[in-house]
Image (tube, rainbow, N blue to C red; front, side):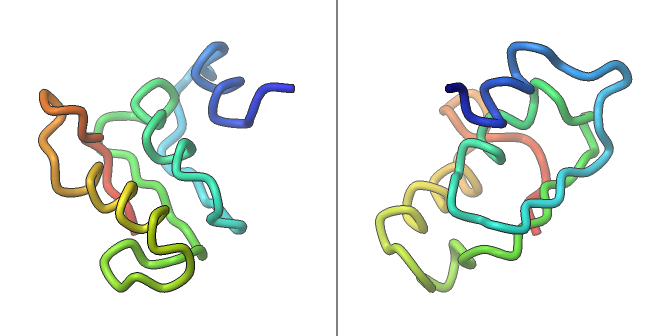
Length: 82
């Protein structure tokens, strides 16, 4: 079974979403794959761990924080994360 982010990336909505609200916050791929289904000025809102505060899983926080601080051309994601 594909994850939600994989399904959305393979079948992007038309029109693209303006926002994605993640009420679980345990899968970084919803943010990291968001350019496939989120408009350029779109935002991913999460109620999960704060990647800059190391709440919850430290390894997950580090992985997401890497996407927040790296430019797109270095593998980062160019969508807002809140």
